[in-house]
Amino acid sequence: MTEITLEAALEALTALADPVRAAEMAQYHKIERPYLGLGNPQIDALVRDWRAACSLDGRITLADGLWQNGSHESMIAAAKLLTQARMRPDDTTAWQVIAGWAEGFEGWATADHACSAGGRRLIADPSRLDHVEGWTTHPNMWTRRAALVMTLPWARLSNPKPADVEARQRVLRWAEGYLEETDWFMHKAIGWWLRDLSRHDPQMTIAWVEAHGDRLKAFARREAMRHINDKRPSR
Image 1 (cartoon, rainbow, N blue to C red):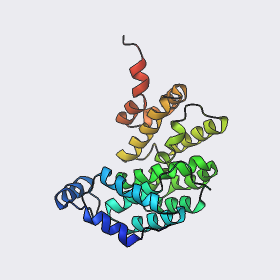
Image 2 (cartoon, one colour):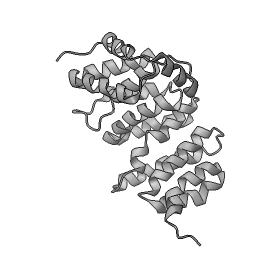
Image 3 (cartoon, rainbow, N blue to C red):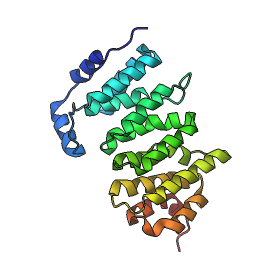
Image 4 (cartoon, one colour):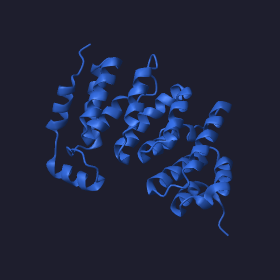
């Protein structure tokens, strides 16, 4: 199998650069890093080819190199390379790489793509939640937030097992610890988690909001209850 080198991957990304769109993206994201101006479909097409060409070890190595490169598009591509429900065998190295990224998250866009990859590795091995719990007191707000965003798969389970219900309760305890934070993005993440949970366990969602919702920012409380309120009959 021919592996894709980091240099080749970066050249492929750069070849599609759009300076005008890059400037617009830099202004929108407001994070100090290079932008190439690529859209997600362009990155998806490249990643699809790289995934097909690389072994699992090669993909992990390429993904980490792309993330460390630090451009917006290379970091998105890195996360997409490792966004996979099943890895045979489930690779501890992939989890370690993603968890290492989380320590330096900055901004929602790249972090959320990495959390999508990380969430699959958590579902594959729920014992990794012990590691994630350490993020709940991390000095980096984006790392603390990742503890919620990366565990969203548990909020979205249609037929949770008893261990999954325990995991939900555990994450909601973490959310309680975030209620004194003032950052909009943190409260948004709490509302997001509860909103997704409400589709599958409305009673757990209602109980949490009734117990703690007065400390949740109003917009996040509305988000948490959005699907529940939509189903309630109007008076």
